[in-house]
Each structure stands twice: as structure tokens, then as C-alpha cells.
Amino acid sequence: MVKLSVIVPFYNVQTYAPDTLRSLRANAREDFEFILVDDCATDGTPEILERAERDLPGAVLVRHEKNGGLATARNTGLDRATGEYLTFLDGDDWLAPGYYDQLLAAIEDLGCDFVRVDHVQCTARARSIHRVPHGRRDVVMNPRDAILPADRSTSVDYAFAWAGMYHRRLLDDGLLHFTDGLRTAEDRPWIWRLHREARTFAVLGMHGVFYRRGVASSLTQIGDVRQLDFIRAFDQVIEETARDRDADALLPKAVRTYCAIISHHLGNIERFEPQVARKLRSMSAAAMKRMPQDVLKDALDSMDYERAARLRRVKRRPAGAEVAA
Image (cartoon, rainbow, N blue to C red):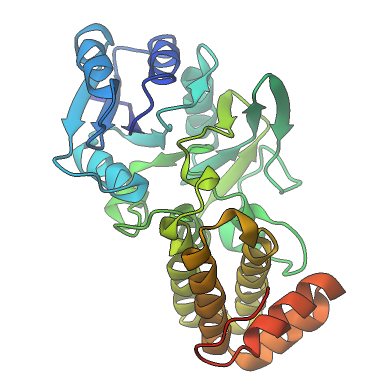
């Protein structure tokens, strides 16, 4: 029986894929499988993955005939996974040797649905540890209790799918798949759903994942229209949270986070192509009009002046008008 399935999408990461694959080899075990998803890469990545299929113990290579994006590639991996536990890694990141052994032992010992872990962010040669914004460690809790408070960073704001491990029962319950086709912020509806609907989780003080930040091909570095998928992602968060039994308590957190992300993008609007910048303003205004207006008012009132003013200015934007953010 396969104990752990590791799902690793790859797209045009020929510079980094060898490091990723070497780190997987340093984590290999007879009962681990590594599902390598080639998301129709157009550089040398497919040839690297062909070699890995032969050389990496437990490798399973899956190819997309057209590029679908990270969410779709992860879903492909989930559909092929046979392990009792599952986790993710991105094709340009890497792991400490033996990390999965330790993480698997920890989640089995705790017996919870999923665990979340810290990670090491790597920007050029700089290294910094980024921690799950949750104080209690190695204690099994109800993940719903880790969503609030609304005005502080919490576990749902630490959305990285690869920063954790998940029991198969979550997959069987329909909680691990991503919204197909989302090109960015795909982790956001996913992490909110886990925290609303899973029964148990824990946060561990481990940091064996190395997250490569500032990669030129990463979507977070590209100011094209795919970046605007964050609006579709957060619309989904709002819509699903509004149907929750605790909607009155949880919606202020969801709305405030959505507003903070909109403000962040508006505050960095110069990195977008002009046409995309115009669309960002228009879509942001429409998104704010879709939010529960009483909750939105409270969220804006609770934010600092600069962010709140930026958001109110865009919210007042007449249809079709061009205004500065």
C-alpha cells in the first residue's frame, strides 16, 4: 500500500526542476509515490521529467496535452494519487532530506485530518523562516476555530498547499480538489474550505520546505491578466462562506481579507500592463459592489486610512470610467 502521495506540477522550470527532483530522491521511501505532472511545458522540463521517471523511486509521470495551470495540474495529481496521505510540492521548490518521513510520523502520531507547517522562503541567496500564523503547536484543534479573528493574520491567510500534509479521507470527502482553471490564488478557496469543513488539524513547528520566491516565470512576478483570477478565487470564498452556518461570524474575515488583497494589487498597479490595470480597477469596483455592504463598510472602517481611501475611491468608480488607483 502507498503511504504517501506527493503531487508535483511542473511548467517551464528546467532551471530548478533538477534541484526539486534531487530533494524528492532524498525523501524517497518504498511506500511513497511522486506524481510528476508535466503541465505541457515548452522548455527542457519534459526531458528532465522523462529521466526522473526512470531514476526517481516511486515516480509516476503524467502529461497534460495543453497547459491548464497549477490548480488543474494539482487536480490531475489528486485523481492519480493512491496514498493514505497526500501532500504537494511546486516544481521550482525543494525539501530538506528526510522531511517527509518526519512530517508523516507527526501527522500519524496526532491522528488529525491535516497538519500545517512553517517553511523557508528563499529569495536569491536570502533565507527567512515564515511561520503559520497560529500560536498553538502540536495540539489537535478544530480548524474552524483558527479562522478568526478578522483583524489579524490567521491560518487561512497562510494558504500554501505544500505547507502541510493531508489524510486521504479529506480527498474522499471532496475537500482537496482545487477550483479548476484558477491561475492564481487557487489556494485561497481551498484553505478556507479545509478550515470550514475538516474536523481536526494541528500546526507543527517544522520547516523542511524551501519556497523559491522571485522566480521570473512565476505568476506572482507577471502582471498579465491571469493575475486577476484572485477576484474569482475570493468571490468563491465569499459565496461559500455566506452559506456557512457561522456566516455572520466568518464573513467579516473573508471580506476584510478580500479587500486587503484588492488594495495590495491596486497599490502595485504599475507592474500591470495598462489594459490589465484598467481591468483590475473595473473588476475591483464590481467585486466590492457584490460584497455584503454592511460587512464591507465595517471592514473599510477597520482598515488604515491609506488602504481604506484607495478602496473607497475605486468603489465609487463609475462604470466605464478611468480613474487612478
